[in-house]
Length: 248
Image 1 (spheres, rainbow, N blue to C red):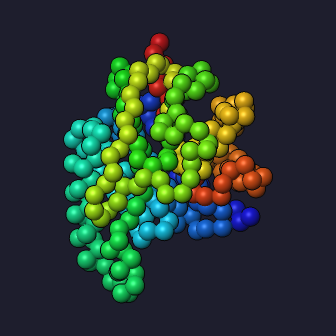
Image 2: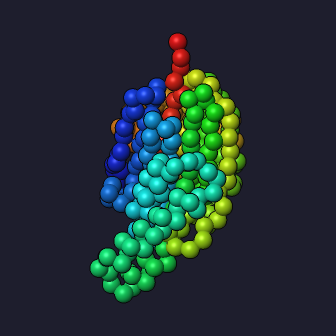
C-alpha cells in the first residue's frame, strides 16, 4: 500500500490537549483528503466534516461547514440558520467557476458531507449535533461514557444522512452531557468510528490503542498498519481529540 501522509497535526494551548490528525485514503494524494476538522478554544467549539467523495467539491464544502459552525452566533440543533448562508455562498462560487458542461451539471447537484459539532462550556456542560456517520466518543479514565450518534459497528453503511449545499437538509441529532476535568472527547470520521465500536464489541480497549497516538507520525503509522491488516477500512481518516483541562 502506498504510504499515506499526515495532512494536519496541531495542538491547542488553552486546553490540556486539542489534537487533530487527518490522513488521506491510502494511494491518494494528501491534498485530496475530504475529512476536515477545526476548533475555536475561545468558544469551546469543535467540528468535523467528512465530504462525500461522489459529490463535486466535497472537501471545500466540508471546510465551509466547519468554518460556518465555528462562526455561528449560537449553538442550535437546527442547522438551517448557519447552513443557508453557506449554500448561497456555494452557489455564488459555482457561478464563478470555469467548468465543462458535465462537471457543471454534476456540481449543480450539490456537494455533500457528514457533520459533527461539539460545544463545551467552561463549567463542563457539553452538547453536540450530528448528521451522518461521523461519531463522537466521550471518555472518562479510559472508559467510554457515550457514543453518538451511532451505537454499534453494524450501524455503519452506505447512504448516511448528509448536509448538502443544494436544497433542504435533514434535521440533525442532538446529545448533551456534563463533562468533568480529565474527560476526553474524540470526534472521528466513519472508518475510525466503526473501528472503535468493533473494538468495544470485541471486549478490546480502543483507549489502550490510543496511547500509541503520541504524535502525527505515530498515528499515521498505526493507521497504515491497521489498514494493512484489514481491521480499518481504507478511507480518509480524521481524529479530533479534546481533553478537558484538569484544575489544580
